[in-house]
Structure formats: C-alpha cells, structure tokens
Image 1 (tube, helix red, strand yellow):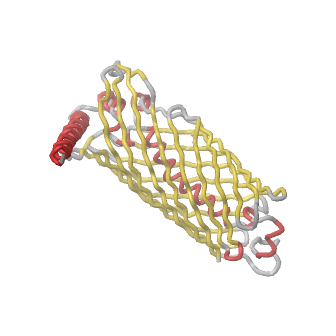
Image 2 (cartoon, helix red, strand yellow):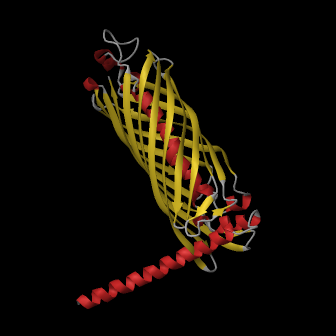
Image 3 (cartoon, one colour):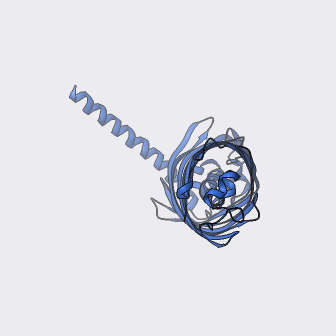
Length: 383
C-alpha cells in the first residue's frame, strides 16, 4: 500500500511538471515572439488579443478595469464612508444627537470631537468570461476567461478644521492573485497562467458638511503597483481622483441615504519584462483609464442605539474607459460598461465611546461578461 502512494505521488509530480512545462513553454514562445524584432502593431495585437494571460492586466482591458475598481476606486469609496461616518447627522437619530454632543449647531454643551481615525478592509472576487468572439486577425473563434481575488486595506485620519470642514490623509495597501486562460474554440485550451499584483497608494481628502442633510467629499491619490504572471513582470504608476455628493435623512427609525459619485482611476504600465528571457517586450506599455459615475441609495432601520441593518442599491456606469491597447486587443476583453450593485450590511455604534463601524456584502450584476462580489468591514474612532 505504501508503494502505491509513492508511485501515485511520483506520477502526479511528473504529470504536473509536464503540464507546468507545457504552460510555461506556450507563453514563453509567445513572449519571445512578441519581444522579437519587428513584432508591433497588428503582430503584437494578435498575441494580446488571443493570449491576454501572457501579458497580465496590461493587455486585458477587463482585468485592468477590475483591478482599478478593486483598488483605487475602492479607496475613494472607503474615504467617502469614513468622512460621512464622522458626521452624526448621518449616523444618529435626531433625538439621540443632543445627548452625545456630536452634531454641530444641534448639540447642546459639548463641542464635536476634532480627530477622526478609521480603517477599512475589503475582499473583492472578480470573474470574467468573454464568451466566444471572432478573431479578425487569426480568423478563428476564441474565448478568454480570468479570475482574481484582491484584498485592499485602507487607513486614514482627518482633522476638523472648522465645524463643517475636515482635512485628512489616507493610505492603502493591496494584494491580488488569480489566473487567466485563453481558448481556441476549435482546438481547445491554448494556455493557462497565474498572476499576482501588489500595490500601495496615498490620498489626501477633504470633507465638507454642507448642512444637516448634505455633505461633499473629494480625494486625490497616487501610487504604484507591481504585476507578475507566470512569465512576465511589470510596474505601473497609479493616479486617481473623485468626488461624492451625499445625502442623509431620518423618517422615524428609518434612515434614508443617497450618493452620487464621480470617480476616475488610471494605471500607466511601462514595457513588460520577460521572466524567462529577461527581454524587454517593446510595445507592451499601456495606459488604462476608467471614469465612473455611481448613483444610488440605501435604507437602514435603527433597531436600538447600537445596531442598524441596511439594504442598498447603486447604478454604476463607466462613462469613459480608455486604453492604449488597440481595437483588436480590446475586442477579446470587452467587459460591459454598466452594472447594478446590491448591498446588504449592518452599521454598529458605540455612541458613548464615539466609535462606529460596520460590515457589508456587495454584489455587482449586469455587466456583459464580468461578475464581482466583495465583503467589506470598517471602523471609525473620533476623539
């Protein structure tokens, strides 16, 4: 029996080694061809169109869109949540506000705390399945699929410059991993590749409490991300900015909130480097940009002074999305521009200690070829 398991393990190891070698060799030959002299324009586009897994998110507009959404745009939304959590009008029923002395102009006696420190952690799961499309260069039917998991941790703090204005700074650190695969629908699987990313960004932000119901937040950030696949590596600079107009009102125990946001994120990749060859793959540099409009709201019910479950619905539209990859490369990575995002969560309050927090699950639906869901937790502490 012992010999059986030894032989079985040996067979599995050999089989995996042959599989890994075949996978590596496929992308290796592709990267050698793409890095070869004269392979630009339609030549390079053909490789990127049918083998995006060999180039990471630099040649996949779908992967690039999901990566930017899970990092830069998520950081801006975390900032917006933190700024709004610091306003008592967004969190506490009017009859509870005066007792804790948090809301400007409405609280009797104590002044509002001036410092707000917060943290947010999210786990995003992205799936992409392009579906069959016709390659106009290679004249064949293809499909590209991919999946990725991205964890993003954001921390920040702000100071109340005036009763209605706060200025803050946030930092985010993200890590992602996944896989991508291309198919020639008549010949079967072409290739499978793993990939990983790690990055950081810094973003100052501003919060303005316009009145008891309306508030505005804006942020501007920059950072860097490293990409590595089974065969290539690369690095990109990040830039993002955005603003959100927020509304909050109470109807008895019900809290109604709304948000309209304008968010922009971009990543600028230099030429990739072949992991096995060490060759610079000239022509693989790309810049991917997303400008997104988000509009929606949520309804929460105050069960007691500590717990408020809520349900939210938001509409998301990529009003502008651009990439330096040409039209052929984009064809194999179309993702769809609009989606609905459903949210289910609970906000938690420790009023006497000026601590708020919560957890939420978000599900995106409606994009042509992509799915996304995320689990997020956050905490705020004011003093």
